[in-house]
Image 1 (tube, rainbow, N blue to C red):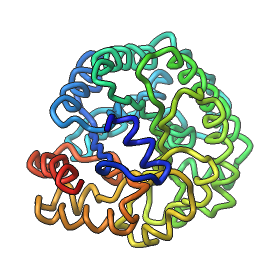
Image 2: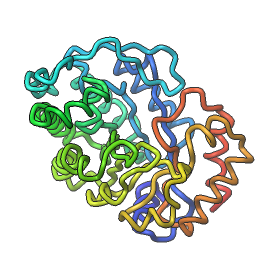
Image 3: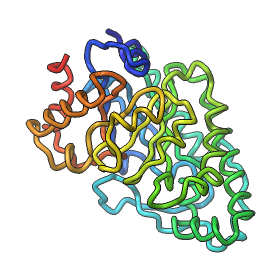
Length: 330
């Protein structure tokens, strides 16, 4: 079964020859040069033959051209620490303007994707570009505390900033439309968890921008995934986006997998925890976790993956084990 057929059948809840599987990670250092990021992504795909390749640029790539400064300080997640933010006061939100994808970090990411799609096209590998929701980009620019404060004290100014960030994101997506081999986007959200915001708050400040992004996606992008971070993700709210798959931490304990899958259509992209399973587990323990995830979803509607950004320190033996275990589970 080819990758696309396997994924589409899994999304539809139909029988597959084996569970689709994909892991990903950041590439600190390499993510500062688009040719190096492309090479690392291509090599990772060639090494493990995942059912799709998720492209992982620096977490701040969509807002770097505003003047944000960051550096990698050795975080196991590969996420760079921010040295200089742009939003110091609520009035600063109104000074933002949409970025042009034809230059700067955004244009380099387009070129990175072009290299990746070209290299993987002959193997029919679906490629997904990671993008961050406007609210997640706002947190990069201002910090989470500033975003939450302005959301409740100066919501008008925050909305102005979010509108500009959304327009910037839409322009970037438009620049990707003609890339062959691009199957869709992997949208990373922040704040879409009940322990951070109420559903009413997220519906007012996070969901409209996601809906704008959703409506802009070309029909030929057949694999679009949204990631809901946090211990209590708003799966029902995000399920209204009607994307093909939803990535969240199945092991967080707030809701059982079978119950969660009734809140959204498409597939669950997950089943394994980045820390407990992939980083600290063993091949034997991974087999048990994978079997449990497959049983909970009745062997259907599951794309086996991790629960978040991945870890650059994940043992290679565990990565190899996941790839070989799905073959044995067929």
